[in-house]
Amino acid sequence: MQTVETGEPPSYTDLVRRTHTKKDGTFGDYRAEELVTQAEMEATQVSNTNSDGSPQSPSATSAPSRILLNQAYLKVCFQTLVMCFVSSIELGSNKNISSVCC
Image (cartoon, rainbow, N blue to C red; front, side, top):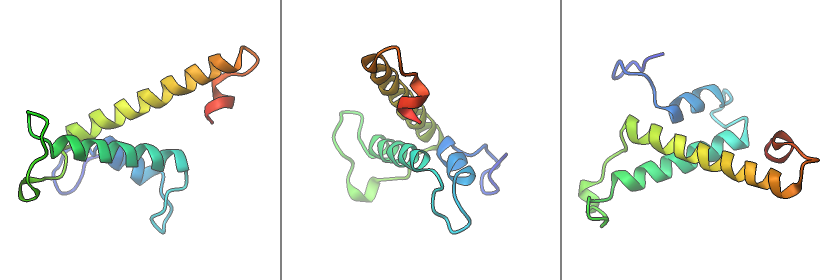
């Protein structure tokens, strides 16, 4: 799948948005919406930060690139998976990870 505008593959956040939204544009899965929202916020923050860590001026801000969105999405997914794994360990062996996170 490629985007019409750029001819590049869509970002992971765009792909999730396209595959997990209803016809009215709302997400059908709260977890997908949460992951996409967190990843987009993180990528935007990174995109609008100078190399020294200071925020860019409002006139210099830009939308995050596909690469930044993909990196942020993978980071958020990994963090979520780790939190689920730790939670399942804390609950003991009588619970599996899908019963904790799904």
